[in-house]
Length: 431
Ligand code: GUN
Ligand code: FE
Image (cartoon, rainbow, N blue to C red; front, side, top):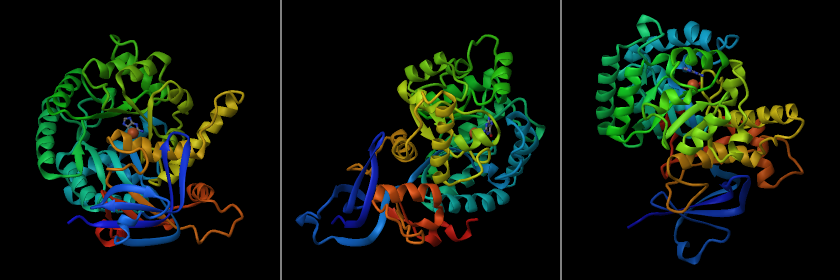
């Protein structure tokens, strides 16, 4: 017999872009962890169900972090006076090289997984390093913690130090073994093809990765037009391509399951290509400011009908908290609003919340919001430690939590229809 579970509380979600739906003192009914429906009054047929009453707390969808570099977790908050290319050479590649040590990977990744859960992130698209074993360790730790989504073994066969570079053949061979193994081993964490970015990958490697993506029907993630020096470098490396996106497109790495990080300097034609191909833009506001890359015009991309999701891009980003990323996206869009003579409207709280919850879920083929038939991914938020306020409607309370809150406001986390236990998710070992 199926199990009926009912959560009661102030439900807030974003079923459409730009508007929050609030059910004060509402009910989420779950059948075996799958959403049956949201109700203002509990229907008679569910009256025998098991009710968890969260009283005055808020129940919201959990977050999707659609671009993060797991092996950069140890350098979080460091090296941020540098810009991308120097930052990669001086900090990042050195840090990632350590993941040839699988024991080290296990220590770092179990902490990272716990900290993601602590911060309310239950869906990810993560980069690992180029190491196959450490990548499997990352997938294992995320899966054990209750996190779902994609992890990519990074591919790089040029322009990096000897201890963080593969030969082309090795890179393709290792990637195939890793795909086979991870498809067998994991249920909720799946492989994603991950050429690091064009400067790290020879044409031959790109070609092989495009073939692997097609053969296994896998999604793709990479970086696009993040930083001016990077864009110029790609032009030098690919005199045959007019624009950066073409260096991926020509190898079949630029389609409707592709996540492209940043797109700060994407021209009108590059954006049109993304729209045409159904490519997803991952906006990483914290990282773009920290390593002084630039500010993407998210409003323009949204108006043009592009799919936009959000990422922390740690350790360019310095926080795993998607609350910081949501408010970061709003703040950088306000900078654009000011610099365009108030012509480019800034993102509202409802819009940015949609991007971090519903938009990410849509990439995984579910949602938007708490949609019937989806397994529950949710957070229970408690703002009782904040000062009493006149502005007590749930949407205003959510805004305050996003701006002021952190993991201390997250009382419960649900992923794939299951309530995560602090011990199981490793929360206690989180930073
Ligand atoms: N471009 C290539 N690699 C990276 C990386 O690790 N972080 C960021 N932000 N950009 C990149
Ligand atoms: Fe990145």
